[in-house]
Image (cartoon, rainbow, N blue to C red; front, top):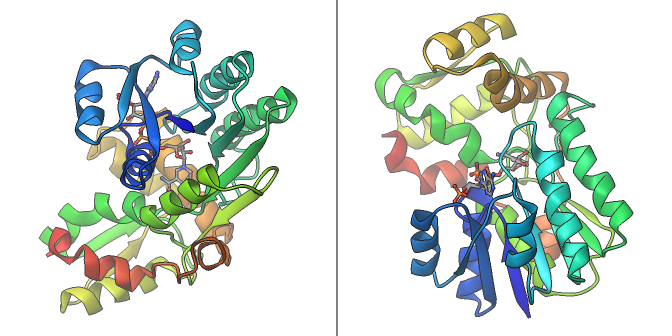
Length: 286
Ligand SMILES: NC(=O)c1ccc[n+]([C@@H]2O[C@H](COP(=O)([O-])OP(=O)(O)OC[C@H]3O[C@@H](n4cnc5c(N)ncnc54)[C@H](OP(=O)(O)O)[C@@H]3O)[C@@H](O)[C@H]2O)c1
């Protein structure tokens, strides 16, 4: 059995490829660069040089592949890029495609429409498929705050009182690996969350507990946060919308207040809590 991981040098794909290789599975990883290929070889992953924007390279990367873990960068090209992989996978009769989606209810915003285009292509392809849908990931939410927390013991956001079922990357990656390497998952959408849903003020309390000093959360109106990110973070308008604001809008609406039993059910252990995650990564914020 051979598994192709797209986005294999990125956050989700990298961790999935690493776990699968550690479990002894044969993994091929898609990357655009020789540097990415070197990184993959170091993990024991067979690199395939290719580009999600180049269909010919995808057909070549899919030769002799049984299962695909499908992930592409978080931008408005998700639908187009992933549809190219699905069409190429169909042309070589792949057995199963596991697509990374999301559990936060984005309610048809531009990022969600792009994912929906990929899912529609998957359903129409006739290929067996499964969705692995992390609620928002702790690494993506908390690691970018590290510099602020170290320097000022505070962080900004625009989540209001919305509760969020943050999930750790490892929990999502282990679920994806289980789905890729065992049977009985076809047609499922596994929404992967942590064990609790908490507000950003609750996250600040967890930081305070772990770091042993007060850490505060400052909630800003969306327009003010947009200004800060464009001025300080050097984001473009499009990036700020797709990478940050559409997520905070969903958090504020309560559309990330989700706790599922997917991690205990599939992995036979509890999901990682925010407190456990921050304790494990304490040095990064100290
Ligand atoms: N963060 C969250 O909380 C969360 C939650 C749910 C779902 N998601 C979904 O997760 C996905 C993003 O995953 P990620 O954070 O793992 O992405 P990532 O870290 O940005 O990695 C994406 C990888 O894709 C590769 N790539 C970029 N452009 C490419 C192209 N044209 N052709 C081939 N490969 C290309 C890059 O590898 P090379 O440079 O080596 O080519 C890169 O390492 C999005 O679909 C997002 O909606 C995220």
